[in-house]
Image 1 (tube, one colour):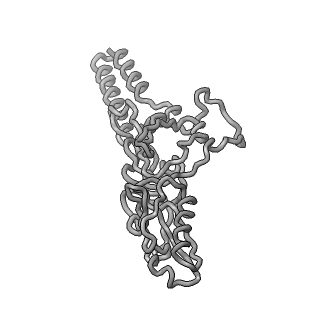
Image 2 (image 1 turned 90 degrees about the vertical axis):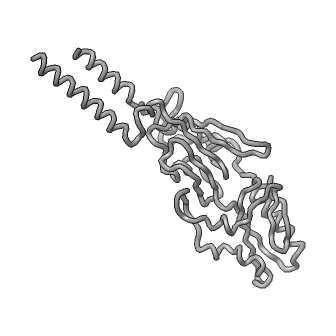
Length: 271
């Protein structure tokens, strides 16, 4: 009986342990060969330049030596934003650029006062800026400077993240690790080799599987997240024993029960 309980205890701990290989970022899979600290890791092989899509939000500012020329755009001035910056999670905090930014409609247009609708979907930030600049140059004789940029990167986290929901990073470029840090990291039970990115494209939606354990991710086009990405990370099978918060307590309880049972058997048998 004692042998059975002993082996049962070993099985419980053996099946509940989580290997470091399953939770360590940026390993050299599959051989896990160590690299020198000063070894150069190539940047993403593709030039990352986001193409604007319908339902994106952009910030457009105007500047000129004659303030009267841009009175129609004064509500859009970035100075009225109150110093927006940094990262914002999905739970609290306001998102002023959602209310003050220009939303690209389903046809790919933004509607700018005085200028009307301008098609910018399918263009990069720089190309969209030049497009708005061309239109405003035709409307005004005086020189007006245009600044256009993405109004933050909005993305959604689901699954084994410590913070799930919609988050915003107020940058025009963010990596997958920026998103992880901004969302409180993954739980210890998240399968880091099973992170799925649900991404919008012109022709529809695609699902990409990402392996956070693999160092080659740094040279992948999915190293950068894009606006409206949905990040979902699968739970490990050990999830059935409890979540990341109560797993240790559950295992301690099991170990305690087994130890108590062994003690009772020893007392009864006199061994």
